[in-house]
Image (cartoon, rainbow, N blue to C red):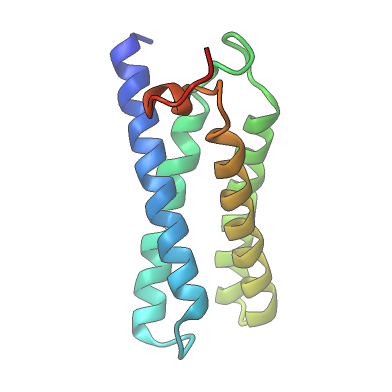
Length: 130
């Protein structure tokens, strides 16, 4: 992968993650749940999470070109998204909410780790430690 491709992938990953975090918090706070707007925003949130998760498999700077523990989180997020969709289609609102909440907490935690000084995103945003 070229440096430019990695840079564009990382920017797409970062922007989608920030949008997903904001939209997820908005969804969590808005009422009512289950209306047409909730469903449309939820579908948009899942698309954003797929944009965050899928390119992460090509981002391997943490372990010098190999998969790292963070990729395990990506697999887990994909599983949770699938379970959330499956749960709501089966009518299990409580399980759907739990998987969505867990995924939202996970994206927030991953974001905190991703912006630590010394990580690639901190270099992109120009606050990396020397």
